[in-house]
Image (cartoon, rainbow, N blue to C red):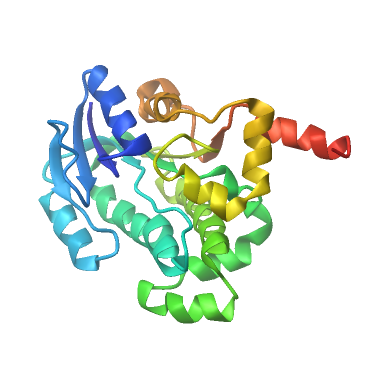
Length: 253
């Protein structure tokens, strides 16, 4: 297969690109920096609409799938970059990429377990998806959104956008989100700082964080024809953290 992948220079993206290459697939990587992996690289800065347009134009030919992995963690006061990169720009890139996808192709995007509960927040998510990067400063101020809340909303909206896309593309393309929790990448410390005791407790219960390679295995399956009946779902991969947290809460721990 010929596959496109955003965010392939580091972390889960780099592990996924390596996994797909190992399966013999051609991988075209879109990232702000050169992944130095031997794959074709097209520069993409999701904070720059001009870069998005240029990357889409440079992506010649057709593709059998798109793995959308690029994202930023909650950090300091980066609410606007979180919502821009993780949601608005990612969805804009996917929309622009759709004409390049062959029939039967899948769009698989990395969300987060932080995005759980999106079903109870649809009105705000619809409102967020109607924003533009230029309107986000005012939107965040009006909705009292800091970096941590922005990250949660960005992933909720990403999951919802994929669910929403199923109907117009049914029978032609598939849409799946993969939601990891506590993965040992270079940004894990950002999540520990942003979510505090919750992350620490989850890690203590399970005994370790996940690895980028474990998440990459799931992404590679979801984008493959073997997952042809998976559509409009969010797949959580957390090593049991969610189940153990639920039982701990039920037992008053």
